[in-house]
Amino acid sequence: MRDTNLLASDTNLLPRDANLLTDNPALYEARFPDSQQLAGRWAEDCLRRYGAGPRVLDIGCGTGRDAAHLHEAGRTVVGADLSAAMLDHARAHHPGPEYIRAGLRRFDLDLRQRPFNAVVCLDSALLYCHTNDELDGFLVSCQRALSPGGLLIAEMRNGAFFLGRTETLDGASVNDFAWQGVSYRSTTTLRVDRAAQLLRRTRVWTAADGSPPIEQHSAWRLLFPQELRHVLAAHGFDMLALYDGPGPRTEPPWRAGDPPAATVDGDRLHLVARLAEST
Image (tube, rainbow, N blue to C red):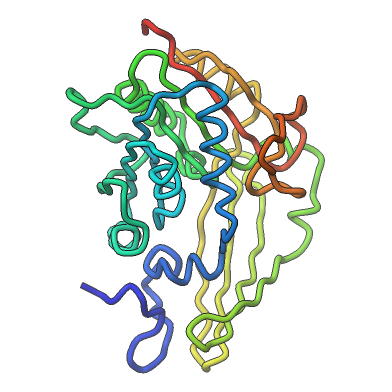
């Protein structure tokens, strides 16, 4: 198996066929640090605020930072992700939860003996469901995974933010950071694909070690507040909260004790929904 702690090969060139972040979890954590554990703390606050039971599924768990925080808060946590490298990193660096390989668009876990009290889906992972069928598959899987009255907690980009706004589309976002003694730069541009209802991202990676640039492409589904309310209700969920902030990726960020806002206008959406007792 490839050493997931290395971004470059022995010749120090960036591999062109790799996903640099999911193949290199340590690089991911260097590029997106969360030293205050904001995402995990926010999720735990939601779980407590809405009275969730102890069993939690973190779907799209990535490096396992948030799953491990929920475990440390006293919950029984299963972290699921499609990336084997991420799961290896999570087991090694964020132990406590059980980690399993599963995709979020349709996950079929053995739940006969262990239904969950909550499903947590953070950092826009839900938006990798690009089509209606994929979104339906995710929500059907959540129905199966949850016990009656269980919670779905998600945090993501807000599709409504892009109605008439272009500030995140007009120019590139440039981020510089160092990892393992090498300086890196990521240059990210976004564009709205209206026909597909996707926010498409192009990210170019460069490194100060002389490696050639890497260009990578990804996309998020743009979901709107009313659309979310409708699709959740169609799958047996009652919306308990839907708001733009504060949250772990808002500015200013969430702080313990902050109540949810009454608005859905910002660039992030935070939702809490409860599965009906009988669906």
